[in-house]
Structures are given as structure tokens and as C-alpha cells.
Picture 1 (cartoon, rainbow, N blue to C red):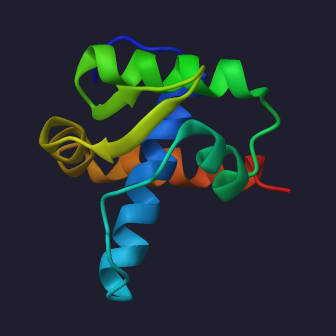
Picture 2 (cartoon, helix red, strand yellow):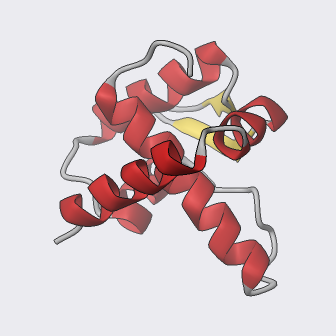
Length: 107
């Protein structure tokens, strides 16, 4: 997995997990997440809007998501094929550990 901050990795895992949930429940669109403020609401992060946008830009720079520039936001956020492939190709134990750590963070 590309070098990234712990918070960016957490966001990537949450995006992938949400994508999987949507696909399983036939919720469309599976891969579109709106803007960075919508991610704050969806995942319940305790970050400010600017920091959330910065995390999106970090993942965008690596190539794990695609997003467009907005008014201090990351807009039109989608998991990229690279981001999906990266998550799908993680060893199962690593993915389970990431999901387990994620559930410990959710209040």
C-alpha cells in the first residue's frame, strides 16, 4: 500500500467498505460519494471541513480516488480502479485488521 497518513488510510478503508455495502444492497451509485463535507457526515469523522478535503486530495494524489476541485472542498469523489484494486489485493488478514481497527474508532 502506498505511503499515506493513518487518517487517509482510514478514509480509504471506509470508502471501500461503504462501496461494498452499497454493491451488496444494490444501492446506486456504488462508487460516488459527493463531496468531502458529505464524507464527514457519512462517516462521522471529527475533522474540520478543510482537513477532510486535504485527506481526499492526499488519496487523489496517490491515485486511489478521483475528485474535482471545489470551493474549499473535494467534489465528485469516486474510488478509482487503483483504489479498489489496492483494497481487493490486500492480504485478507490485513483487511480484517483494518476493518477491526475501523470498528473500534466508530462511537
